[in-house]
Every structure is written in structure tokens, then in C-alpha cells.
Length: 477
Ligand code: PLP
Image (cartoon, rainbow, N blue to C red; front, side, top):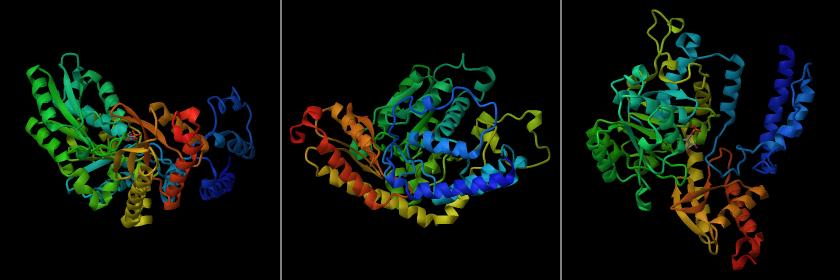
């Protein structure tokens, strides 16, 4: 392909993109196919000779598109969102075009310097105090792994990387039972082990389902008495299941007395902290955390992938991860090389999409979306509360709540499946207190109030259509 052809197809594809987004409400949200439907249409071996872009794009429409679930659909209420606001997409197109590898300052000075400034813009936007620096990673999982490795190295006097862990004893990390599975996985791959991740039971509803800090203190004391080595505490603001949040000031207080490193996973809810009114309730005490991760690619609108890790002092993480062979040295330059702060060496220019996003909407534009999502989620919650036999299991935390339809656990999955087959909306299931639940969150960038109202209509309709034989519930019969 020459660059003239590239320009032609680039225009075709951006027209296609605009059309896709303007007609997306006509598509079912979740892909309506069965396993194997797509792979059986793809040739089993690669072509030996070139094919035309016309043919490739035509196959893209007919084979690939039916197998896509539409995360940018305004009636996507499943999981958490993965937004891609148009200005951030344009920035990513520029980044893809220039295709620089931004591992060192000198391999793209603008990327490094923009990253430092965007971290500081976001620090201010989220109300964190001056002094925090940070780095942009691909995902919250990577940021959490970086933090867990830092806990490990700090607790072993920075000897784990050098000597391995075989003679280090049991390093312990503490979190609540509401954290995301990325915390478990970070402990697996950092050599801490699942059995040394101590999950403190969460407290009741009014307290945000956060961890019990008396229990935390006691577990740390017991571990010390048993000769184990407490290494760090991981807190959550906005857990994936039901939006649990920890009392950050209490946890930070324990960490300070015990000399432990702290990491906060605010992957989803962190974006909402651009609205000052949510900070007091959900992250009072955040300014005492050593490491904080939030994903602008979830709720803020930056195209995936874009995960920001703030660090109160970057040195423990740099001392954990920095490795500078001869070929990566930049003699005579007092600069930041962000690849020394993270696990992968290679890095995309992710700061550009944050710059485009914030300039194109202003913080007020981004705040108003998040505030609307929170209001509409509450409206939906109230409507479902009034539906005969339906139960709100957990009240809205920001824009996430959970509910149950009448009947047993199996009915919850049946309703989720029927709704997703219906296609007007997309929801996912979960579990809370040993019972199946249905999660509902509002967060897609283009969602309007009528999309959320349509969700109430879809839930009502689909439930009514489910037969008595399917649900065992009389009023359906
Ligand atoms: N933490 C929480 C609370 C999440 O909800 C998620 C994903 O949804 C993650 C971490 C993992 O995020 P990532 O996909 O960026 O690794």
C-alpha cells in the first residue's frame, strides 16, 4: 500500500467510524453469535498473494462486525465502561501514525514531557495534593503489579530481585474481600502467593463494604507474632462487584503505624473524583496513599488503554523496576525515562489522548457526564425497586447498583441471558453475600437519559415475557 492509497482508505475508514457511531443504537449491544461462528469463516492458512483493501474491508463488515460486542453502545450497562471519546480516538490515530516507541525521554521527548504534565493535570483534577508524580501504564493490573513488586522489594530491603525469594519468609499483603482479581494475580506473579494475600472480611452496607480495620490490625499483629513479614495494604475505592469502598484514612493510619506501603485501586471510581462532591464520602484519606491507580480509559473517556498510577514518592518503585543496560543509557541528560518506572520497556504515547480529551471537553464537560450517569443510575434503581418482587441488593455506589428479580439464583442468570439475547441493553451477573445478583452501571460516554429509561422498559418487558415454566414465579405465568 502506498501513502496515497493509505490516505484514500484512511478517509473511508473515518467515514465508516462516524457512521458506525451515529447508527450504533440500531445494533444489538452484545454480539448475537455462538462460539466458533467467526473462526469457521476465516481461512485456515494465510494468503500467499496480496488481496485488495475492498475485499479485506468487505470481509471485515460481513465476518468481523457480527462478532463484535459494542462497548461504545450507549446502552452498555455491563461490567464497567471502556470509553473512547472522539477526540481521544483522534489523538490515538496520530499516535498510531507516528508510531514512536516512547521508552526513554530521547526516543520521544514530547511524549515524556507531555506525560509528566498530564499526570499533574490529572492530579489537580482529582484533588490530590502537590508532590504526587506518576506514570501512565496500559492497565490497572500492571500498575497494581508494579505496586506489589514495590511492596515486596521494600519489605526485603530491596534484595528480592537480586537474591530471589526462597529465604525471605512469608511476605504478607492485606486487602478486603471486595478487591478485583488483578490484586490476586499480582500477588501470584510477584511470588507472594495466594495464601499470603490476607483478605479481611468487609463490613456492612452503611460502611461501604470496606475492610474492618480492627481485624486488619489484629491480622498484622498475628502475622508478626508468627514470624511473617507484613509488606503492604491494598485498598479499594469502587470494587467491581458492588462498588465497595474502604475507609482510606483508617487504613492509612494502620499502615503508618505498621510501616507498610499502601496501594489504592480506584480503577473505575477514580474518574468520578474529578467531581469534588464525591471525594469526602469515597476517598477521604487518599492523600496518605503511596500508590493510587485509576483508569481514564474506563469512565473518563480516554480510549483504551490508559491507566494512571500516581506515586507519592516514585523512588521505591523505580528502585524496584529500573534496569539500565548499556544500550538504554542516555549519558549527560537529567531527564525522566518512564520505562524505568514500569514493567514493560516499550511504551505508547498515551498522554496525547488525555491532552486532547481534557482540552476538547474541559473538566466541566467531563464532570457533567459523570454526574448525569450517577443521577440516571439512581433513577433506574428507584424504578426497579418498585417492580413487583424485584429487590435492590446493593444501593448505588456512584453509578453502580445491584438487584435481583423474583425467584432463585438461577433466575438471575436467566434474566441476564434473556436481556442480552434481546439486544436492547447489555448487563452482567455477579454475586454478593453468597447470592446471585444482576449488576447495573451507567458510564458510556454518549449515554442519554432515554437510553437508561429504555433499560427499565427492556427489563420490564423481558421479565414479563419469561414464562412461568422458566422462572417458577406465578406472576410470569
Ligand atoms: N480494578 C477494578 C476495580 C476493576 O474494575 C478492574 C477492571 O474492571 C481492574 C482493576 C482491572 O483493570 P485493567 O483491565 O485496567 O487491568
